[in-house]
Amino acid sequence: MTSTHHHHSDGNRHAHASHAEHDHARLAAVLDLDAELMADYLDDAANLIAESLQRSPARIADLGAGTGTGTEALARHFPQARILAVDGSPDMAALVEQRARDGGFGDRVTSVVADLDDGLPPLGAPDVVWAAMSLHHVADPQRLLREAATALGPDGVVVITEMAGVPRFIPARDDAELGGLQERCQTAAAGAGWEALVDWTDAFDDAGYDVLRSETVHVERSDPSQSVARYARHWFAQFRHRLADTLDPTDLALLDVLTDESDLDTLHRLDDLTLAAGRLLWIARPRTTASTAPSTPESEH
Ligand SMILES: C[S@@+](CC[C@H](N)C(=O)[O-])C[C@H]1O[C@@H](n2cnc3c(N)ncnc32)[C@H](O)[C@@H]1O
Image (spheres, helix red, strand yellow):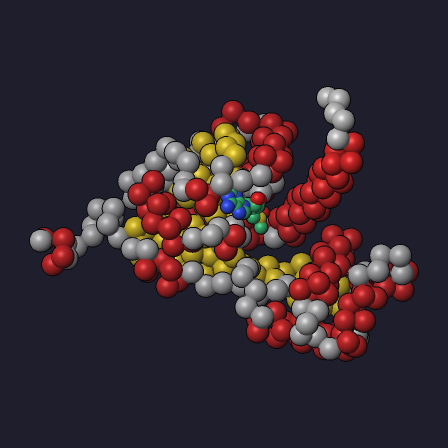
């Protein structure tokens, strides 16, 4: 460590850094858990991409790649593809690189740190621009879609995925209280306009795309597991934190109990949960670059 006389501010900086590291580690863990439980959706998405393209993509850009779970699924599904993984966080970029090395496809994956709010970095004319659960994070999604249309290679497609509502956790033992709580959380989350619960259909149209596929991919995990229980605790913590102004005090108190990892009764209560979740997926192609695009009166002027 370089020496400095500003001990006080230095200490603060370390406090901030470790807080950020903690947040980052937590986000990375949740993204990995999410992908572990949603693996089926990634397989389905890859199949839908191959169908829409009618070929295997040679180049893919993964925007907002996170820990690289999508990068990995696409790399495995399309063994010839080269993938550019873009994320604003250097920590995430490092995790993608490590995942690619560990998975034996490091030679096909390049990781780039770039803030998508500053415009797209050079993508190298990809066949597929993939953005999973990341478009709602950027400041101007319309602009990103318009830029992606220009960046795509011939006949390329943009694929966006988002959550189809919040996941539902279904207890095997009768637990009406848990069921009722989740109903109220679902309603409150939808009413609160969570940015992750978003429909991009109109945005694609406005940005000059034809939507080729608009799908809801359902994912069910019908075997209880530690992963499902952890995922449930993550979601209950989200509800507790983000719906604090909407839910009534009884529900908030119940969420406190359900997220208390030191409470053995709670741990037992969550150990029989199964999961029903879903992803929305859009595959779209820019109207102007489609070779079959009919000429319009405006384009003849
Ligand atoms: C919810 S995560 C999704 C990660 C991954 N695509 C997945 O499906 O697991 C969103 C990711 O987008 C990245 N991100 C958010 N805003 C960004 C921006 N403006 N520029 C670049 N990356 C951004 C975050 O760092 C994060 O890794």
